[in-house]
Structure formats: structure tokens, C-alpha cells
Amino acid sequence: MLTFGLVCFDGAMDFPRLHECLREDFRLLRAAVERSDAKARVPSCPDWTVADLAEHVAKVYMHKAECIRLGAFPDEWPREIPTDPVAALDENFAELENQFAAHSPGDHAATWHEPDQTVGFWIRRMAQETVIHRIDAELGAGTAVTPVPDDLALDGIDEHLKLFLGYGSIAWADEIGELLSAPDERPILVHTDNGASWTVSAHPTGITAADFEDGEAAGPADFALTVSGSPEAVLRWLWNRSQDGPQASVCGDPLLLAQFQGITVALTQ
Image: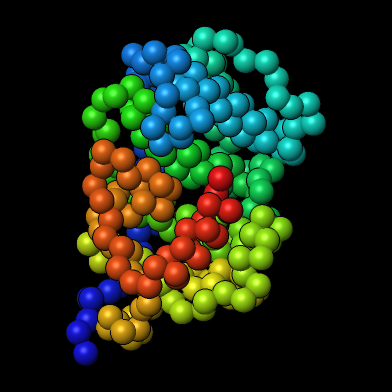
């Protein structure tokens, strides 16, 4: 049987590296917003202008800073932020950075992921949030999109599949509606060209997303749908940000693809 040479994902990022990526992507996002027309549309988020994007990101930073500072979700929300997009980003990223500086990753913070109530959760989540919206900002500015480092992209794929789809399909079951009432349970393969691989399958009880385990069958016939490409291409495809970037290859049953995309949209947007 023909094999893909698949391996289990084993690229977990440490918190200093995640924080480094967060800072760099914030710098790029801020620069893209600064050089844009605030009223310019964001191609990857067509309902948003660049100003809307900056406001969203600023409010996300504000909220996460409060989740860390209070150790609970804030009651009064949202606070007013500066109307200038760059000022709003600067003020609220500074608040987030202050909270990260005042805490270690293992300290308590309120999060929406019940098994992980730590500051470290938000370091990872904000690194991934920022790289996706940095892509949005660069697309809105009409400039070349800066490549996503492989380690950050791999971590983002892992987060998307296991956290948003795996955990989210159970924790936010109401968001899915009838999509899992009688799902196609055939497995999907998500595979990057540097060998990291995951399997994803839908069940009435939720989505199962796991690292590909050594020794599992790895032939084309074992997967009804395969998504593959560079780490950046796969990450951007999962988040529907493939515009002006590397393209993932999607091969397999179009009905299974439609089911996967419908569930993804329900849990991530």
C-alpha cells in the first residue's frame, strides 16, 4: 500500500517562543493598520474595514488582560477604547503585555477552555489570534503577506483542530445545530509537507481530532478527504485566509469537505 510517510505532531511551542511570535505579529499588524486607509475593506473579512479589524483586536487584548488581572471574566464589558485604530491597538496591547509581565504562564486566569485556566493559555491563544489578524491587516493594506513561521503554523493547526473543533464541538454543541445529528464519520487527514499529521472525524457526540499515531494505516484509501500543504498553507486554509498566499491541496469527497467546512465555520466564526 502506498504511504504518505506520516508522523505524529510533536512540535509544541514553549511560552517564550509563543510570546516572541505574538510580539512580532503585533508589530506587523500595527504597521499594516498604520499604513492603511481606515475605511479600506479587509478581503478575508469582507464585512470589516481596517478600522473594524483594529477595534476587534484591541478589544480582544483588553478582554484577555482583564481575564488575567481579575482571574475571572469581566462584568463590565466592553470599556471605551480610543477611536484612532493605532492608538487603540497600542493601548490595549500594552495592557496585555503588562499582565503577561506580572504573571508566570502557570498562574491562574479565566479562560473559556475549562481544562486550562492559566495565563499560558492566553499566551498561546493571543499568539494565534494575532497571526491570523496580522494576515487580515496585511491583506487590508494591500501589501505582501509576511510568511508564517513553520513552528507557529503547526501549533496553530494543532490548536484549531483539537481546541476549536475537538473541545468546541462538545463545549459549544449548540453552535453546531444539526450538523452532527447524523454525520459522515469517515476520517479526514490533515497533513503538512514537513510530516506533521492529524486525523479528524465527526461523531454524534462531537469531533475527534488527534495526532496521527505511528503505525496507523497510511494509505490513500484510508482517508475520504485529505488536506495537505505547507504548515502556513494548511493553517490559512483552516482559517479561510488563503488569499494571496500558499495554497493547500484538498482531495477527496466534496460532501465530506462541505460537512467539515460547515462545522468549522460554526465553531470558529
